[in-house]
Length: 253
Image (spheres, helix red, strand yellow):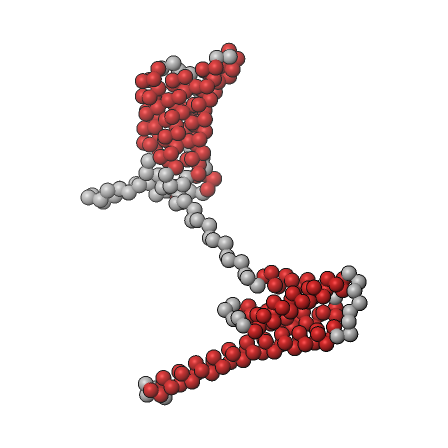
């Protein structure tokens, strides 16, 4: 067995982090030895009806159980918490069930706490899990996508305009900061088609100008999408021109 070189202090135990998870969960079993005398005492207290004895044994068993759960979790700081829980449970059990008095209960509780610290202090514990990632912000265009999907599944006479509005929505999704005419066409078009669809679903007879209106709306949506793409093309041409001028000024080309 190798020993640390002279002059260098041995570090804490580093084997726990290489043990399988099921074995790590068993590391609190030695603490269960503290509870063995309490089990028959608990049933004896139930049989005799001594409330003080029942309360003391329940406190002791609860302290041992909570300490074992903390040790099995093996998070950073759990060994210290387990020692405190075991000490409190042991002190209460000694005071109520053992009849040791206040001073004796405190002494036995401190002994249980110190024993747990000596047994588990320095054992490598897992770091607490990282905080959950914040939920992504909802897309502001999702409600419009849902409304357009309902329009596409509705009256087929409104489908051409709904399809073009869907293409305009896709263009706007690529440019979240885009505003102006394109967004107004999208909002007004969806609102108008929804109202018309409701009337048609209620049995209203469509006027002769409905096909013309649908075509006009589809054309406006198509033109707005083309304008958005044209604006991007112009912006790209400007960037190319600026870069060419910069290269000429620097004598690179």
